[in-house]
Amino acid sequence: MYDLAVALAHCIGTNDYPCFRDALFKGYAEHHSVPNAQFAQLDLFTAAFYVYYDLWVIGGTYLHPEYLTKEMEEMMYRWAAFILQYTKNHR
Image (tube, rainbow, N blue to C red; front, side, top):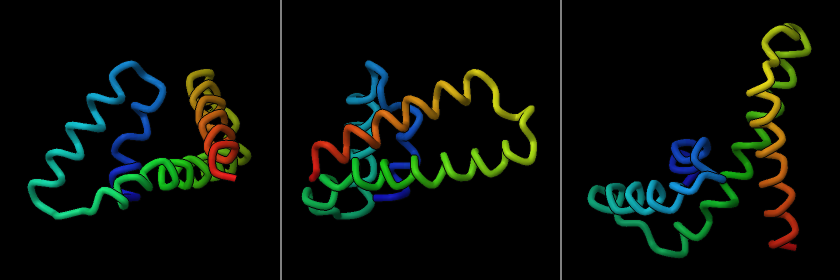
């Protein structure tokens, strides 16, 4: 699920996300059998990826602040909002 979460991470929050997710699941299922319960864990693995990536970006921009662009900052806020919403939904 982590690999699928990484593949979909940049689509979260867009109107096209459901289409991308469904197409990825369908294509993946053609090659690997995955129980639906496992697909249900996608948000957990997406949140884990966002935590990892945000920490990586923060570490990198601490050493090289010029790498923190406005787009990167907006993306990190969007991901933080996803993580917060996920934790609220799964207490």
